[in-house]
Amino acid sequence: MPVTIAPSILSADFADFGAECAALQAQGADWIHVDVMDGHFVPNITFGPQMCAALRPHIRGVMDVHLMIAPVDPYVAAFAATGADYLTAHLEAGPHIHRTLQAIRGAGCKAGVAINPGTGIEALAHLLDMVDLICVMTVNPGFGGQAFIPAMEAKIAGIRAMIGDRPIRLQVDGGVTVETAPVVARAGADVLVAGSALFKGGSVADPAPYGANLRALLAAAGR
Ligand code: DX5
Ligand code: ZN
Image 1 (cartoon, helix red, strand yellow):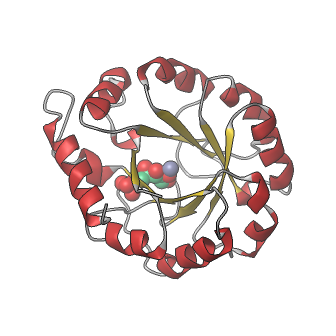
Image 2 (image 1 turned 180 degrees about the vertical axis):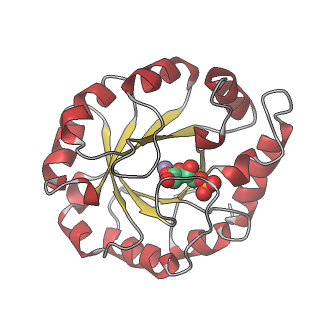
């Protein structure tokens, strides 16, 4: 599977998301990663379904919504209705991740499961036939700009081995830079979320650095 870079709009100008999406896409991005935070599951608050619905017409490619919320089940229908392509819920968000993933697929979205740095991979074994994406958190979720946790390299490789030949995208989220992209790609990741490293030096007014950063990350990942 070729490597995809998914820019996280958590690093965008919060007053100008439409223009940021346009700039990212003009610079070659085909996924947009949307970090939904509730101030409860993670210590930060970002946006809800209304914001995702407003973003959708500005995203030509894949809208990848990462739900860092608990509980998650009461909100699956609302986020699915925004037109998200992927809805990713956390393994740790509640006792019934199996039901959550069923609900996501039932609502017509591709189902993702995210796993925090401190969580073991065994529980994923029982979910492999009901997910389209596994998101390995390589920082503790809540904020952009944190450092990659090196111990996650072995975890990515372990999950890659579990996936086998199933059609599951293996995503890495947090601390992806030109230094860490080769490490995670070698371990088996094929979707790299990038916030601060992708937006670095650019803006809506001067978007060329977005493209340069995107190409640098792809090259570092060996694509
Ligand atoms: C962290 C978010 C990430 C974050 C990545 O909770 O899920 O998507 O925006 O940002 P960087 O690339 O800056 O670590
Ligand atoms: Zn994320």
